[in-house]
Length: 402
Image (tube, rainbow, N blue to C red; front, top):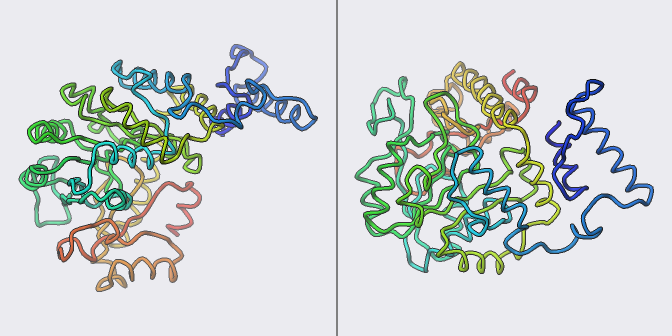
């Protein structure tokens, strides 16, 4: 609740919330924030002006690339969490969510007929955006495996990871222009390891491929062995070939705000911003103000994100496993991509039939796994999986489990 009030304060005031009485013993930080927010709303309701800079400023366009103070805050965000000082204010464009950030990146790099490699299962928007810009999506399949090494095993009971075939990826990238990488990954929950990223980087450099990353689940990595890696920081040789797409939507539970950004190499800045300008003109100005408050939240908030969602993912995973689903524990994000073929009552159904049955008969919503695959006629993935999400409250999850 505290961060939601801080975001609201940012919208109304036009600046990040600052607790000037943080050493006060008579009230908590949340109580002081609530009081400040209440006074601001009351002042506005009585005909007084809020503290918004320029009075009407939030109702007007910001610079198309985003407010300068927000872009500076985003640059500092990468220094704060990743010790990455390679992001300058002019390397950032504020976008209409990560969706537009990625679309503008695809259009910046791709030309009609170019191939874009996508790991499947995938977020459904990736191939749709490719087709919108007349790019050809090429799919590389993540498959259940028994370790972080790229090996698979026929014993599904001990699967604990999702991995790709190195030869399959190399073949796909050999004549491609773009690779889209989502880590932590939707829908599998995979967090790509540094070893895997080193292999991916080597292939991108070998075949002159640009990398577009979707980093929206960056603060949801579980366990000491899994961490989010900012590619151009860990692999500076890829800095001029990587576009980082991100947003506050998932981390702030504010997907409706449509506030994201792209970190792009300097030589692509003008092209990227021109495309962004023609697609959406500008990200919502009030939300840009509020994001200043989000980026100023204490480290504890971001640390607690992984704790909160790991608990929910574990709870849902245990319940699904007890019901007969084959569950690979997610390493990040808040999804479980599970094999339902051994579940009594679902075996023999298509993934769409299984999802509809659970919705109508049990009252639990999930997504058919076939929605996340692009290869046709692949019997190893067809009608095997369902995606469940653990992003709802613990109370909602408890009701679904019962």
